[in-house]
Image 1 (cartoon, rainbow, N blue to C red):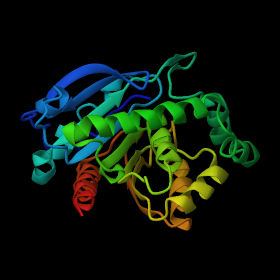
Image 2 (image 1 turned 90 degrees about the vertical axis):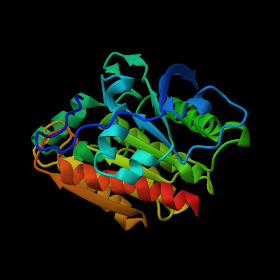
Image 3 (image 1 turned 90 degrees about the horizontal axis):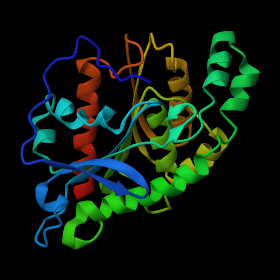
Image 4 (image 1 turned 180 degrees about the horizontal axis):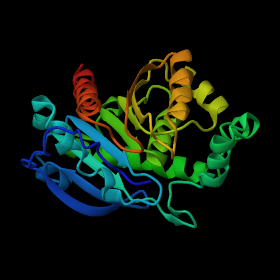
Length: 278
C-alpha cells in the first residue's frame, strides 16, 4: 500500500532538532529508530522520552514509510516539535504478498468489497489471519523493548507513553496490538490511518479490558484499496464498546489526507503526551 499525502497538504516537514537515527534489531524486527541522541547512545544520565511512537507501515512497504510522520505533523503543532520522542519503525518480514505483518487475505477482501458479498465479508472480519499470533507475540516484545529504550537509565517508561501508529495493514496491526496488551498496561493511544477490521469478536472482548482506549482514525472517501466503509465498521465497533474514538474522513484515496487531517493527528499526539504526564 503506497503512502501519499493529499496535494492540499500545508507546511513542510520541519528539520529534526537534536534527533539521531540508527538501524537496530528489536524483537526480531529490523527497525529504524529516531530519538534523542543520549537515549540512543545509552547515556547513563539520559532523561526519559516524553513519548514513544511505534509506526507500522502498509503492505509491501518499507520501515521508512512513516519515518517522516513526526516532522510532518510538527509543522501543524509547535508543541509537538518540542517533545522528546522516541520513534521506532520496524520492517515487516517478507511474505508471498511482500512485506507484511501477517497474511492479509487481499484477494478475498477485494472480492468481498467489489461484489458487496456480505457473507464473505462477515467471514473475513471474524476469522483469525495466518501469522497474527506470532506477530502479536513479537510486537508485544517490541513495545516493551521500545519502552526500555525510551526510559534510559530510569527503566521502561509507562505504557501510557506509547502511541501506536499505522497506515493500511499497519493501522490494522496497530489497533490489534493495542488490544492485545495486558490489563493495566494499555497504550496511550492509536493513530489508525486507512485500515479495516479483523477478528471482530476478539476485538470486542479485548475492548472490555481496555475501556476508554483512545483512537484517532482517518480514511479517504475515494479509497479503493481499503474503502472508507471498512474504517466505518471499525469506528462503530470501537464506539459501541467504550473506546474514545474520532474518525476524520477526507476526499482523497489511500493516503494520509490534507492539512485538516494532519492537524487533528498532531493534536492527538500532543494530547497523548500530555495525558502521559499526569
